[in-house]
Every structure is written in C-alpha cells, then in structure tokens.
Length: 103
Image (cartoon, rainbow, N blue to C red; front, side):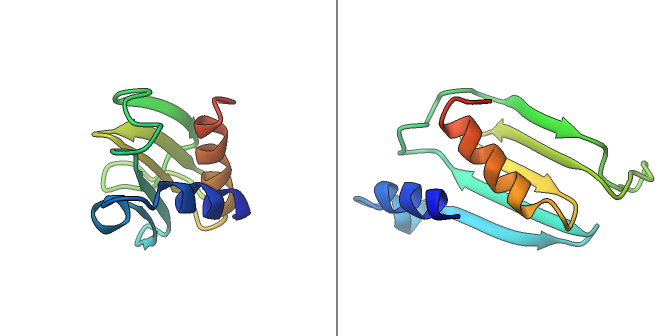
C-alpha cells in the first residue's frame, strides 16, 4: 500500500488527479476492482490492450466460475485488476510488479 501511495503522489501534478486517478471498488460477484488510469503517467502506452495475469475464472451469467480468481490487464489506457474477495492485496501487488517491470 505504501508503494501505491508514493506512486500516486508522484503522479499528482497538473490535472492528472482531477481527471484520471486510482479507484478501488467492490464487485457484486463478489470481489474487488482496481482501476488505475495510466494516461498522463510515465506508464502510459507501455502495453496496449494486453493481459498481465489471470488465475481461475470469475462467476458470470454463463460461467459458474470459482472462489479463487483474479485477472489483471491493460485496456484503453488503464490497468484493470479484478479478483475474488481475498485478492485486493494481490491486485495491488500485480499493479506494482507490472509498473516496476517485474511481471
């Protein structure tokens, strides 16, 4: 969490914090959603529309899924991570590893 705080603070210049940013919210399937807008950061354009990591499958209308799932990807200039209720820390770690070029 400390790394994310430091990264976020470093991005808060000009208008980035007003129009882009980081959001963490709950999902109804249930789970977590982490969204980091990369536009205007040093990570912008690093990977376009790419899967970063996937484990298991989330429940959906057509898929029973499972209790252990997570998916992180880059879509439309954003890092998007979603996972089951026990994956918030793993989502944050996935973003950190990707941002540090460790993934």
